Image (cartoon, rainbow, N blue to C red):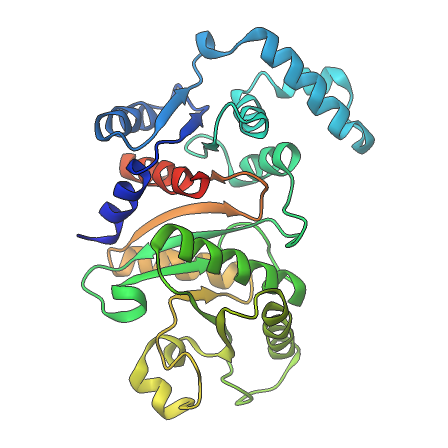
Length: 309
């Protein structure tokens, strides 16, 4: 059984309710049929007849009270809620849905804003970020070809503190969704002092802070990607690394590196890229690429459902 089927099976083990606000997207409609047929989740497709006006008015007032200090006026909030994206986010906040998934017709910034404003960030971590579950067919690297890549969608130039939070969120997701013991690599152009510079120092400080946040998680860095994921290279470049070339969670130094890497792996290796999965929020949610296929939506719903279990 491959990783994707395991994810869907795990979602079926405890059915959760997921809101989908993009009711007029053809891919979403097809995905709903599959989700319902395979009993992956209970889906609320937010067509106009599924919007409860009394709830909408209450959500508008709650959202206004939560954000008025930021300069939002009530009329602007009412206009915002003409998009069911924010209704889905507030449903999740309230517990009427266990999570929400969007992004087929919304941009990542739109999705991120709705999650940040409605759900808020986990206080312990203090950072909203994202990851992809990458599944490389026929590969023995990572966890039989499975990896978590982070951050590939939210933070352009993370600080050391943000890198630490990203790594902890990604490790927790790997354990929860994929049932694996995370082995986290803080990636760089340097492997344990082979090069110097401000960027290397940022990464080593990120690792130090991550170990404080999650001392039980196996982590190492700074490390080049070949030494992180190829055991034979690790023996040459850094034989003392606790990862031993078997990293399955890869933390990228910035958004450029993460975004480019996941797309290269996806296209060159015919890999599945599930996500971007939003992390660090108080409730689970997932973004989608606007170029997503139907299976991407199904799998993001499954991942979001598992995280709500």
